[in-house]
Amino acid sequence: MVLPPKAIDNAPRTLSPYTQSFLHLHQAEALSRDGDHQKAGTALNRAISLWVRCTEEETPDWLDWYGEAQLKSTEGKVMLRSGQVERATSSLETSVNKAAPRDKAVRSSRLAEARLAGNDLDGALDAANYGAELLEDKVSSVRAVDPAEGVL
Image 1 (cartoon, rainbow, N blue to C red):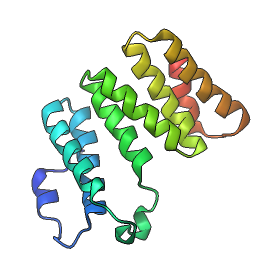
Image 2: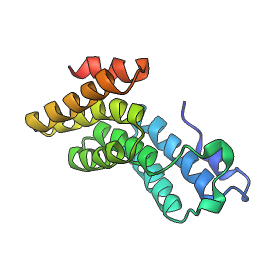
Image 3: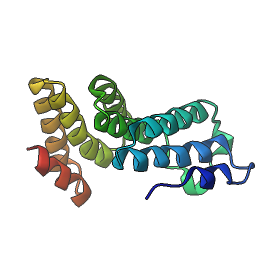
Image 4: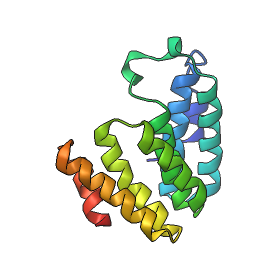
């Protein structure tokens, strides 16, 4: 579901840049899934510029899980869908490196997809194997297993 631009525009002006970044990031994700890559890119760039302005004091409790790893993960998905494989790969690499173990397993599958799209078969296998090793040794998550099975 795409948030209409007016929904974000009409949000209270008191929302922190942190919260606004989160909203624009999810708008970018939705627009990307709908194939509107230009508007998705605009929303993504807005999310990133707001993120850069964030401070820890602005982090609402309900959004304490949102951070650079999540931002880079969604950036990677949006860029991969738009065919910007190099930027997608870079963002997903950052996301995997900064994520919690379960998220590393989920995101390494997407990183494998990006590397495969960039014709980096060895890199794709490395990412897929890394995710599989996490699933074998450290993570128990259906959310991580399903994408891994799609790559392997």
